Image (cartoon, rainbow, N blue to C red):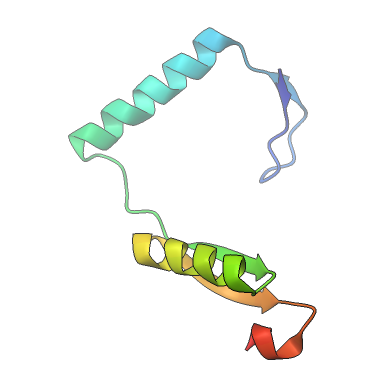
Length: 80
């Protein structure tokens, strides 16, 4: 499986299953021990503000850690 680090723009690199499991285990251990810093809120944009869009938006806001920063819909009155 190939992946690209979009944040730093590095070249694609291969990730094998063992490397993935080792990385996730290390992150889980750090989280369990309280050594991980508090992450900032994840900013989201919502496309489509009808019934399903409002539902998913509320779901993200109720669970915390997310901030809706932009909305768009074909019908302007729904995006307000």
